[in-house]
Length: 428
Image 1 (cartoon, rainbow, N blue to C red):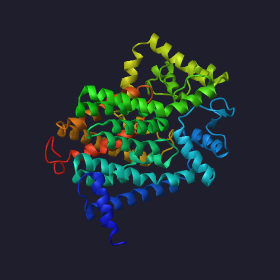
Image 2 (image 1 turned 180 degrees about the horizontal axis):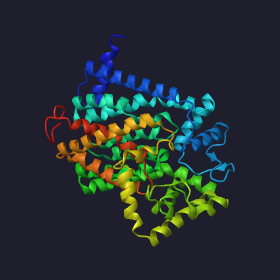
Image 3 (image 1 turned 60 degrees about the vertical axis):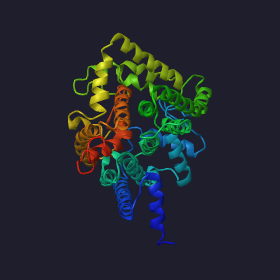
């Protein structure tokens, strides 16, 4: 039985990859997954005393309420416990369930979360294998296992731990596949799950639409994209109805869409060091934070002031697009500025610096890889569409971690830049 296990696994992987997978490739895949898991566990244990930072305290608070039977409660922003629409429900459900099963405490959750690392490595390998073949997939493995920008948030209380494998599944379902009604339904379901974990992931729909347009023409792609959107909206609707019961207002997923107030204000516009960088509180909105109100009223007040600011300062949009959508999303900036985010997010300076250095190499190589694959329209055009859509979405707020769902594609394209791995432009 044990002797036949490798053969059975090779057959399974061959079906998933759409090509024969041999024992050598299987063993290299397992080794990369084991290496990635060991690295993630070691990082969690070494940094287990880190102070919760960024969004982590909010997820810890909601998880403690969850474990006590008060689902999706929070004390943000005024300190009073209440049913909240502050965050999307996916990650609080994950952390809250683990708190309920294992007891409260971030360390237990993070150790469980490290198990998602091997899954991410496997899905990255599978995506590269399906798109570009064995040699690129094998080159991807050590990077997927070791590259900090693909695993740092698995080792912290951040929804990216769930969003990354979910996004990889979406890419596997959509890229380089002929679209069908059944595929559109599946895609809509996956995107609903992804949006309920990380609402900003909506930019992936741009890649879906373009991938299906290349594969099936604009009429069929338009119909199937609309179907996927409808399925996603239908599956999100129960949560939206819950929000309506809690707030007596229309809040599709969460009030995180009020974040634009942290970018479109005089404080961000006039900062000489960090122009248009998002901030959690600004002088203009202090009265909103001092005067308690419901979550929906809090959201409406912040959004109204942000939209008023944009109306009064039309140049704010292109400026924020440059500084956030381009510079901060893609880290095309002074390295020190990118590393300034690290402590706010609860990461480690040294590991983040290594990740940034590797990223710069990968980004240049990925651009070369895109050029070498320029005849592969079914791959290149959806990637470009998602990159542009991400820049537009993250004009509101941007940082290194926001581009996380696209990090595996950067790694895959970077490996495709190596001439010995891809025989020539436009060829598998």
